[in-house]
Image (cartoon, rainbow, N blue to C red; front, side):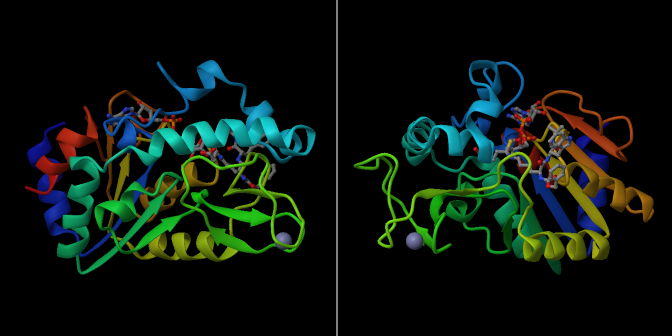
Length: 238
Ligand code: BJW
Ligand code: ZN
């Protein structure tokens, strides 16, 4: 499928929703989860990204998050993130729904970002529920404690946990109102984000996928562009 044809679709759209996944940050040096070099090749999600894992061994889970925080603290947004900032500036109506917890969209300058899987740069207290920004890349003591004495956890969404009701509602509203959706750098295997594109297609609106490899969405998407998002997204909005 040609980038030119996709560019025409994007240029004609008034209301755009973009869904991003780990692939958009790959060119910034942030590891993805699945596929070659992905985190789940090296680590078991059930040991590190579930509430049960945290209950069993909060220190181990924090060590993993601390390592990732250190890695991502050095990462800079890439031309893919920057193209989405420009797209937001041009579109009459725009929402960026991201599964990423790395904060790179906001760092690039995107405004309307819905971080549906939370943020690596926030903690949440298991006892009093307080959420706090926490930017230090390497924490002094693991696991960190809240001033109330409770155990802090990364404010991210683990497997088996519900997403923020408010963020999910806002994402679904944007998905329902858009006249084009761009799906960038996600394997499309994790619910509920993986169902957003189907809602757009069912409404008869186009979905353009940008991914290095084919995904379960590729066959259903209106257009599926194969390549790195850091190269394709700037061309898509040129
Ligand atoms: C490039 C590129 C380049 C590379 N350019 N492209 C059975 C048991 C328990 C639960 C379930 C179950 N069946 C279903 C569920 C629900 C579960 C789920 O979907 N599981 C499936 C895996 C089976 N979902 C949930 O539990 C969610 N909650 C929920 O549904 O609540 C209701 C419920 C509760 C209980 C039971 C059932 C329902 C919550 C999901 C939370 C996901 N959390 C994580 C970790 C976040 C924190 C952290 O970062 O540590 O979120 S897991 C991980 O996957 C992370 C990601 O956001 C998410 C999606 O991954 P993503 O972004 O797609 O990355 P990859 O690596 O998979 O793909 C990268 C893509 O980029 C690839 O396609 C590459 O080709 C491409 N790429 N370089 C363009 N340069
Ligand atoms: Zn507390």
